[in-house]
Length: 130
Image 1: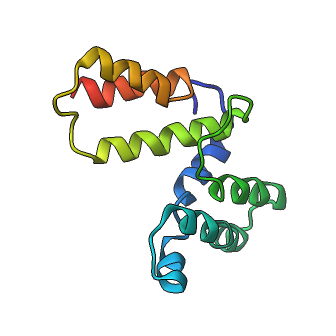
Image 2: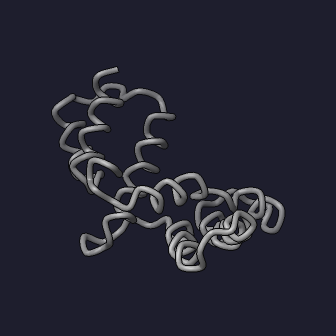
């Protein structure tokens, strides 16, 4: 977020609260499907942020971000793109290392998957250099 000059407080809050609805999805829907987590996350995020005394504008912005787990369009705001890249990198880093994939092919895929330059560079560091 810092390298892209995104709104750091917004991206950090949204990152911490991104999948906060997982327990509600499990309890209400008996499922961990990403769509259901995205559906349940905004209200859970609002509850936490209001208890912490966050400004209403910030609460609304975070609710919007944690409720949208789809890939942002090219015209999406920078904060949403940075959040998407962070979530994608966290997911990919948790998966097994690439197996049987040509490094140049893998790098080309990273360039298509990640939306920001900082996300692409960090993905290369985390996924290729370790």
